Image (cartoon, rainbow, N blue to C red; front, side, top):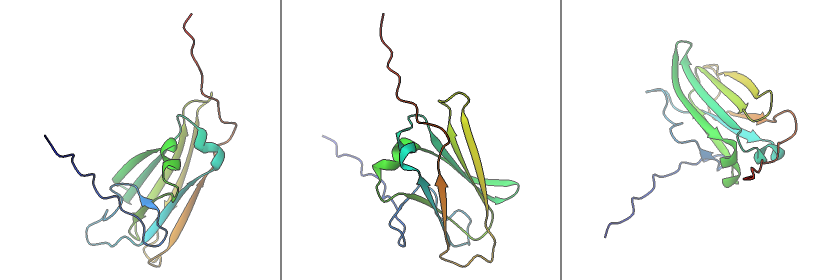
Length: 142
């Protein structure tokens, strides 16, 4: 008989108790994580079946350091919410994507992180998709 593999520890923000998207700590060697970026999706958008948030961190204009895709349907599974941590340098891009409506929805937002940003700064990214949420389609066999 085998023992189940323990799940990796899920990090939480000490300040907000939000879950940290896996991998979003210690992005730049020697630079502490000092900025918390909180991802907030509007309550009506949590019903979107295909929507995702694409989060990218660019340490320099030429260096995309990390990219993560967070399905919107995963957000309500954690009532505390989700966040990422970055050092006080670089840029963060958050893209809201919903390929289901016609035309698809794609919205982008850049956050320029100034090296002089005080440690402990919190940034809130509010995501509200335009238009109504499509109801799930049911396919019937003829």
